[in-house]
Length: 215
Image (cartoon, rainbow, N blue to C red; front, side):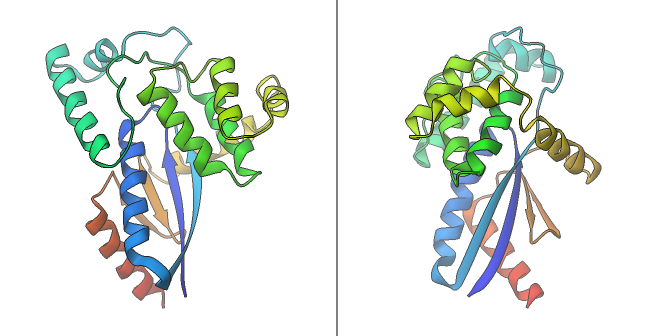
């Protein structure tokens, strides 16, 4: 059994991070019983200065990248198609508002201590891209907790304290220092970097090559 550790640097507000993980899952399935994968999620904020004031996503993207709202809508529509083919719910991708994701990242850390890190990340993706709900709102976050069957009372205590704040900040500092400027980013076996939401076949080849090099 070949063991591969995958550290995923991503943001909850990043659609390509959700698409990238769905593609990674397909790659891991394809590699099948020969490989044992360990996945760990790490925090990255696309907009760490977000002050909690929400605005429509298409307007925000035009401000950030330029172009027109029609171009942004076309890009988002293409993303919805890609996501649908992977079984992801991106129904409200164009209707969502910008939001701060810091508390959501803290919740992912908390869920990780209970073996539910990936499930929490996926639930947050679905809540934001599929339902256009505000993943900085405490009630929305607690709804995600309940959906996964975790304890909302304990989660509320986390959100109302500074628990996991240092862990999220440490992630951000570590990967910024390592040169990660866009997400998703995959660090394989603490050594090799794969950037972007690569297609499954590319990931399969890369993981096989890295595994062979590590032998």
